[in-house]
Image (tube, rainbow, N blue to C red; front, side, top):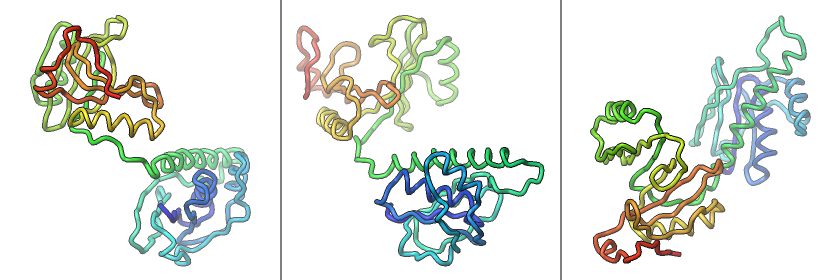
Length: 282
């Protein structure tokens, strides 16, 4: 993303706030502009709402979408909700964020209530821009061949019945403690675990994960995670207890456990140590 354009009808409120927010959040690496199909003056409530969070937009001007150089834009975000959004001609990436117009006429509102509407729109736009910025230049991650999820359930038989219905398949394995669904067409491995309050361990763990093609891919995922700055809970190793796997454990930003794993080949299984102790891979 090199050139970002926000559009709404009057280019007076939502798109003006978005322009100021994007400049503040993304910085100078992206050219940020805003425009409208019927440009008007920058709304003073938009200026006030932005000033509350330390961003000054009083010098910004409303512009017509026709005045924007198509060569300066590669991403267009429209912010209209109930109105007809402006059209920008060009070969660009397009996104639509429907944000209610805080400047919509309503004679029953006082200034405090009107400002509250601008604050709400400002905060909604800000949160979306923060996600947009976080997804810029994401480094390449591992290539998953299966998604794994272990979830804890209160009623194992009833949950097993529900997921059998939902996924259209019978469990591959079931015990009094867990039920395992394998769905190759969805690339899904789903484990239902009894939620009995016992301490988490390899039989009761609640986590998500992805399967990779082999040991080398798990080791590569470790180096990619380290370079990307993600939290490595356990470096890659080969484990033998339970299901023999090459595995790497990460934690996501909310401290959810993520398992990155590969099943062992027949030759690798034949190398199982007598003491079943895990073998470090990196």
